[in-house]
Image (cartoon, rainbow, N blue to C red):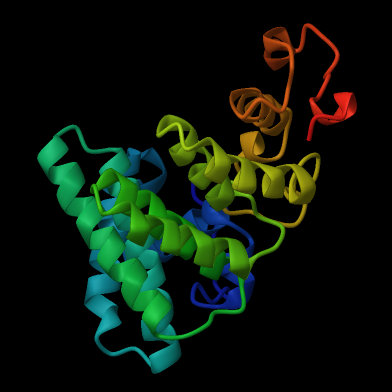
Length: 239
C-alpha cells in the first residue's frame, strides 16, 4: 500500500534530493488521491506510464518553476520506461524523449539540487546508447563532472571509452582524476540518485594499473592482476 504525502510538494528541492525511490512513493500517493486504484500492485512499467499521464494532464498549467521540474521528471520517467520496455523500438523512442526532456531541463538554467548532476550524467549515457558522436558525449560528461565534485560516474564513462579505444594517454589522464578525486570517497551518504559504487572502489585502481601497464609505466604485467608489487619505470630512474 503506497504511503501518503498530503503536504509534500513533488516539485520541491527537498523531494528531489531524497532520491528516486522517495519520488516514486510521492507520485504513488498522488495517483491514489487522483482515484487510481491498486497503485501499489502495479508493475514498474504501468506506474511510470501513469506518472507521465499525470504530468501531461497538469504540466501545461504549471508555473515556470514547476514546469522546469516537470521536464526533469518526464526525462527520468521516460528513461525508466525505456528500461522496462520489451520492444527495442519502443525503448529507443522513450530514450529519445528522455534525452529531449533532459536537454530542455538543462537549458532552463542551473538547478541547485542533485538533479542537475544526475540529468547531465544521464544525458551523456543516453547519447551513448543513441550513438551520438563521441565529441558530444564527452562534452556532456565533462559538464557533469564539473557540476558535482563528489560524483565520479561521468568520469568513469570517459575512462571506459578511452580504454575500449586503446587511447591509453587519454585514458590515463581521466583515470588519474578518478584515482585522486574519487577513490574510497563514495558519496552515497550525501547523494541519492543512483550512485555507482564501481566509480569509487577498487575498480578505479584496477583500471589505472591496466592503463599504466599499456603505457609502459608498470614493468611487470602481473601487477595488473594484483599479483606483484607495483614496480614503476620511474622507480628505476627511466622516466
